Amino acid sequence: MAHIQRDRKKLLARARRIAGQVAALEQALEAGDDCDAVLVQIAAAKGAMHGLMMEVMAGHLNDHVVAEKDPTKRASEADVLLDLLKRHAR
Image (cartoon, one colour):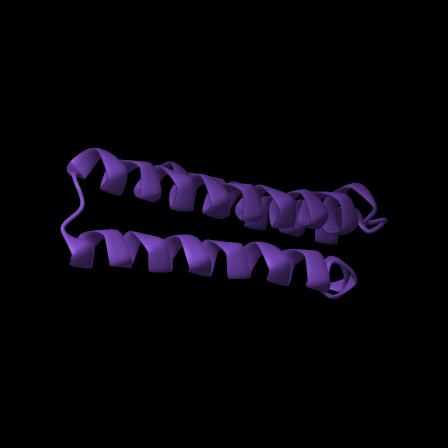
């Protein structure tokens, strides 16, 4: 995936922020924080993960669907995204 390599630094930075948010969630649970603080941490981690997923999906869509010249391969790559969206929506 060329877009993964091209955007590697930016994607790694996002992944590391997510790791920090999950670590903060773990700390909040270990410390016995109130449920509202834990819920905020969960929402932040989920939002960050969703943002990362959208960014990678946009790269896939642009590089492997829109820019693909072979109609068979384009359809196959679009199916990859559709399957992912179905799994994500569960």
